[in-house]
Length: 317
Figure: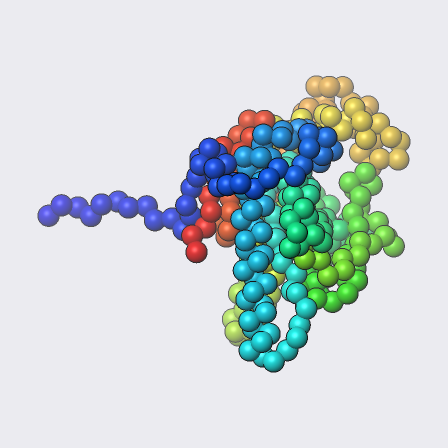
């Protein structure tokens, strides 16, 4: 008998960049070169071509998903005899430190807000839901900042539940990368957006399942669509070091900056320090907590040199 063929099953359909770009169809480009430059990150200079070929087709896909979700919500409300308002569509954005989540979030926010059916788009990072440095220090977790246990998960879940329920003026805490801490008394207000993009390292991580069958919500339970930014770990590490070295010449020079001490290091010592932080903290978090959640995403954007997306994987319905 012939042996059974070794067939690799996958829940995704994978596209080359050119194949994905063609799915833009006739969607018009709504961002200018100046817009893209303003939305780019410190070390990720987004190009207009990248926006057109990768993020514009994605905005078209999300626009279709939002429309379908709105129709489903309307049908359910009709069945229940209720006249609820629109339910916010929540997009989760996950991936490693330095992989470009913030830039991707800003670009998507700008593109999606230009579609006529959902002009109110907000972007929020989960950094604001980290425990304060004081709390992390008391718990011995400062070297595990960004790991799942460093977040106030209950507060984040309450926030997402309130947004999803359509409540007005939902409060979110604010995080400062300059001060490397949550800012006491500072808040962001999210007021019934059409779309909310939630950017975070571990937003796709499932909770531990209960033995008694009682409900334990995951952050991703509130997502209508999820995106994972993927890159080889060595490449992400290189981007982290590049960003660290750039910040050392800019924000770190301010005496009030949390990392001001790094601005006084020699180039060689600063690079060694950045590589150590990546290896001992960020890479460990990536391997233990972030990368294992990649297959839970609805869409995976794989990046290569220069933050260029070279392939896209879309989960089959």
